[in-house]
Image 1: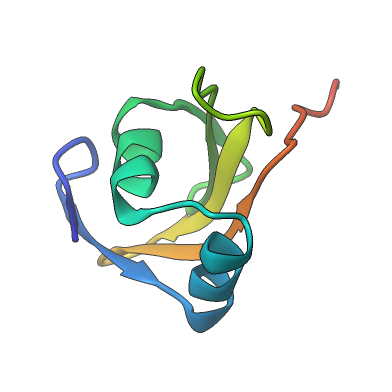
Image 2 (image 1 turned 30 degrees about the vertical axis):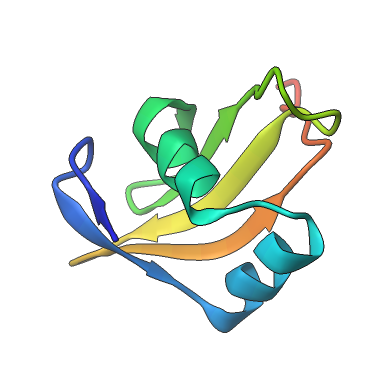
Length: 85
């Protein structure tokens, strides 16, 4: 899997893959999330990317990822809400 947005390969951890399966999130939704979602940086390498999917009842979907030599998707969440600062 590859992200044109981040110009990088995407690696999905076993944990993230298990969360995707449990939450019925397919590869197409994951790539759309990464390519078109809202990005918030925790620091220089850690990010959250979230996107609303109209056809799903569990919005927002979000990935927690690390930007290294590739994008490492650590987990995939649903019913996500941005924290207020």
